Structures are given as structure tokens and as C-alpha cells.
Length: 250
Image (cartoon, rainbow, N blue to C red; front, side):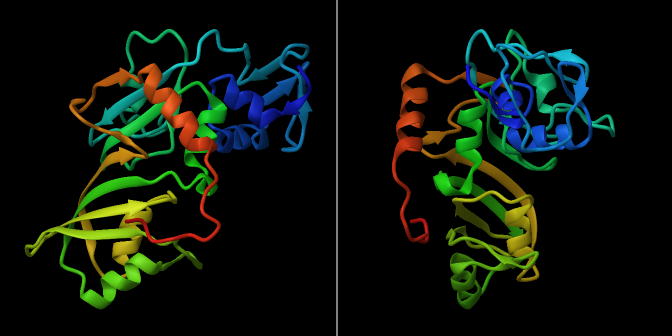
């Protein structure tokens, strides 16, 4: 196998996402043939080199695993938590291969979460350029005006960068209404920050769909394996050519 960037090797081995792998490298937790590597552009060959992460030797995964979980509230979407909170990994039972979360959901959010040991799949699902749509239902403390709804759809500034166009639909009118939100990007706390831009707090948030895949009947805290048809459908979706101009999701 030709040499590849270390973060890609670590991700493909099912240890962590590429972004997390970069953090591990920068923190000096990755060695190649006994030498600590901290430069992100470094390359290696998993078939020839001894690569360790946190002292553990990497191996090619024997089998690619793809899971869909209903993440409950009150747990974090990480491999471990320094504060001792429950992680989604504690809910994965009976899976021999080591998997990790694809993207994230906040501690107090719930809904559809993918887990896998396929680094390329995870990277493509989360990368904004793939334009994989995620659908959420959101309960807010207060209602957007029509002008604010328009601005929400067109994009709002978060940390100095405007969000991509988003879908927004009022599902249930009330003092604390429910909205459907559709995104093709996934910045940390994005939906909460978008509503906060208009002075509204998010009371509840649930992701119900990624691409074509719906949460369905998976109960909170449980998971199932993706079917072969679902895996193949995702592969076809990731191969399609995204729109050259970002449009507001329908």
C-alpha cells in the first residue's frame, strides 16, 4: 500500500475521525516506528510501518461496520469524556470492531447518529462539500418573524462566517413552537447559534434524518446495523456531483 497521510490512516483504522486524528498527532500521541510525529503532513504505510496511537498499535480493520443509533439526551458524542459523563460508545454492545461517531450531537440533543470504522465514509458524510442534508426538529423559546425566517434560510453570521443556506419550516405554532431545520453543513452548536442570533433559545433538538436515512423506529439508546442496500445507497449519494451553487434546501 502506498504511503498516506497519518490522519487518514488513523481514521481508516477506526480509531477516530480525521479531525480528531489531527488533534492526536498535534498532541504528540502518535508514533511511527517509535518516533513521535507531530507534523500533520506526515505520511506512512500501515502495511510496512509500526504506527501507534496512545501506545496502541494500529491494524487494518477486519470488517467495515456501519451503525445507526438513536442518541439519547444526557450523553456525549465522543470516545471518552474527561468529565466522566456517559458517552455514546457505552451504548454500543456486541460489536467486535472498534467504531466511532460520524459527526456529533450535543449533550442535551438527541436523534440519528451514524457510527463506523470506515474513515473515508465518515469524512465524506461530514464534509460540507458533499452537501449531505441533515434534518432536525427543533423546539424554541419564542417565534421567528417572517423577516427572520428569510434571513435564517439565507444564512446568518456565526463566529465571523456566514452559514450555508438552510431549510426552515414552522411545524407547530405556539409560544414555544416547533421548527423543521435542514442543513448541508454541521458546525458545532450550529442550530442553537443560528436561533440565538435572533435572540431565541433552543429548548429541544432532535436529528431525524441524514440524507435519505430516517431515524425510524430505533429507540433512544439503541442502534442497528445499516443494511447492504443502505450502505450502497450512501455510496451512490457520496459519489454524485454536488451543486456548483449552494441552494436553500427544500
